[in-house]
Length: 327
Ligand SMILES: [Zn+2]
Image (cartoon, rainbow, N blue to C red; front, side, top):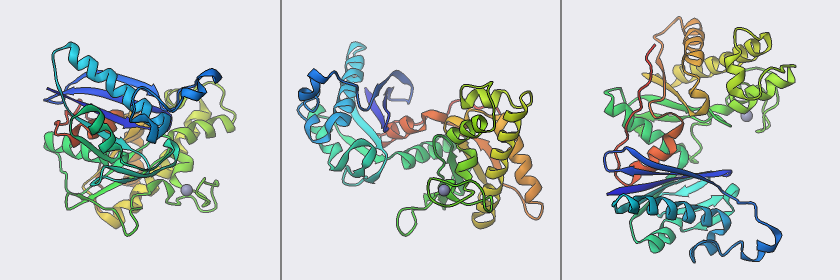
């Protein structure tokens, strides 16, 4: 037995084949919108299966990826018993529909039903951030860590937070709770894409760390990862990173004052920076929060694969926490 998990993004669709105990058997990633030769344009919406028409190229990419992973399961004598999907945008998980995902070109798409018809197995759908957060919660539970009062903050292209209180996710009145990236922390600071100034995200998202490094004249790094590696040796990288940590620390102090979490868990691509991020963040938060206990600031147990783990969890596959070095 095996399940296929799919994390649908605006640039790539990532998939993995999990066995029943949550071990990854195979992985594959395809572009969401394959570049086609002009002569193929007429065929661009027919895709690899009949179900691809309604969802355009993005659904064709998903179907092709599931096909590939199902074939991989077949080669090892395993039957695929379910498909778990996570999608950006407005998602009606109970109905299995993506209500609106602008980056995918999907409007009211019954994606779970379309894939269930095509592959003949149960299909479950969830919003990508919520799926990732539930995977983190499951991994924490497996590792005997507190799961009732914590905040999960994946840091990637953007920064959002999923707030758990009483063990459940806070959605807010309009479903918009957790926009931690758009908490203003630098009065009169840099302009954010949201229209405000000084948002956490402008200073601390992976993309913005690299943008600010280049704008400050940094020339030694070609990626955010390299900026982080240059901290302590390149003065520009050191300053830009310190400003990112400052913005995050101020934001975490606000979260802590309002929510009193037991843990703040940092995930996403930038979360892989580990102690280079966590150690100064702990210091920054502790310096500001002298008046009360500080939450534990930890690295994600599921890391950058949280979306896939969350998608697999939707169809009953346990989440295996990958080992994280404790400080
Ligand atoms: Zn903003």
